[in-house]
Image 1: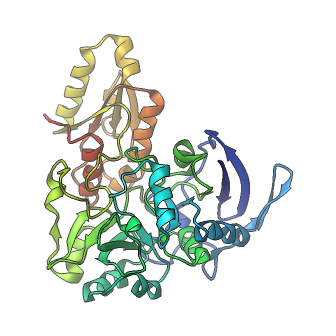
Image 2: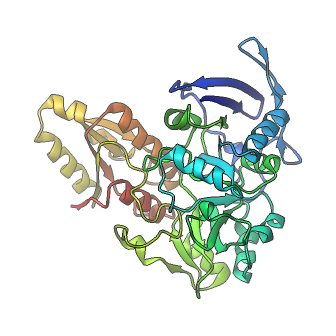
Length: 404
């Protein structure tokens, strides 16, 4: 399959084709103007809900306007095809959420177990009643504050939503993304868009188009390149079908933020440890190993001095060549100068966990580029996003943690 690549910035729109495993140069810069959290504020250039882009030329041919490009991508989804696209959290792999065959194609492209539910993405509240049986008052409160934005709510599904989309469950996960490209694509498709992360199942989630191309080029119909995403972690997932709202996956919107709106919010017990393979997952990311690099990942938790001492101690046990080529370290600005061996990747400062969240998946993928066999990563439990970051790292490490 030839995968079509569309590139959107706030100035231009380009189209090209990708064959097989061809990769895009990873030169995209962060585009914060494309990801105003929870509102339409920011610097995005919108006409209605469509990005204004100048027509350009590429490879000697006429470029598409963004309206035309989004219309074509929307048609692909409406007709049962797959399009990867940016959201404010990570890149998603979009297909028609009301089409059982499209859901099957998503699972096949990702190599994803079919009992792992997909999230249906909508562009307005008017679309919600069609795909759910009942909207509780708590959902209206959450939507008013955080939609569009990085939170997914679980409802009882309506009959129109196929079980292929829900992983066989009678519930459906729904999100309204704030990224203008995502909103425009959903509107162009004219259907709810089922979209898990646009990566091979189990690998670190994609935060830029180059990651999607690496994993899925040749397996899907099109990729929309909108640059680096803003948040870098998947959405919070909250289940609204039980007695109390329950968080199934932590994210940018925290428990404390939700409790201010709806009162008591529980955390799913499954978040405390390795998944139980005998329980069907109710939301993405609950059951299977996720976000994992190829090398063996270990979280090192403790004071900065103890973490540095432990990792350096492990490196000293190796020959210099082994330490330099086989071991990776994911660290912060504060600790990076203290590692003289190994492949060191810095994800920012401990004073800004937004930056850590945005960089962590890219760091894990960088370790795959280095082809290291063993990876050590600092713990990032502190800060507003600490719970969400550690949820992803624990799953990536298979809950392998050393406390020092």
